[in-house]
Image 1 (cartoon, rainbow, N blue to C red):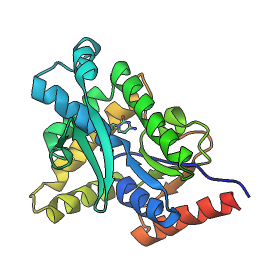
Image 2 (spheres, helix red, strand yellow; image 1 turned 90 degrees about the horizontal axis):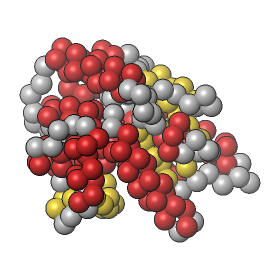
Image 3 (cartoon, helix red, strand yellow; image 1 turned 30 degrees about the horizontal axis):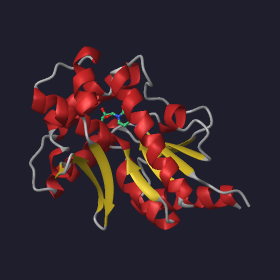
Image 4 (cartoon, rainbow, N blue to C red; image 1 turned 180 degrees about the horizontal axis):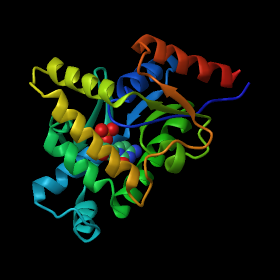
Length: 228
Ligand code: DC
């Protein structure tokens, strides 16, 4: 019997990573870690302090950053100091800033270390982690026991993101979302440090025509088969 410790779920925005990863974690009894929210919290710190998006600007932001991630019944919460900033992380302004700060080597090094630390603490407790992001299978945990790369057609990804905005009562324009996503995908894939790409041993899962339940079932199934 092999033990699965890390399930890495990577892929572009809107491929269904967050909802899928959260449900997979519940099914396996693992911790769920949304690493994008950590990049977003760092981006919020840059925005609040008016810091330019470069490594020189990042040094003072990172040295004074008090970032923590806590899990509550309603999911993951991200804190800066004692302030729960979870509700401030999804605006278009923070999305854009997160895409910029995530291209900085110093920010990535800082967060990768933090992500490994969180996973180590969890595995010491005898449990596993479903970690979701862009570079989990390639950089953070290249030895993860199961790596999934989720994709979906760009138009479907934009439609899903628009539906998320609608669910939060926010209006949006699907064409504008599609063009922002294209730009972010390009930046995430073209950056020099940890570009978005599937690990060589990742299982590619195109979710365009899969239901949410089918995606979850498929990944849970793979995890259970690998563990047996
Ligand atoms: O998954 P998300 O949209 O919340 O991610 C926000 C930004 O952070 C996005 O531009 C990609 C980047 N990111 C990253 O570079 N590496 C990760 N592991 C997670 C997110």
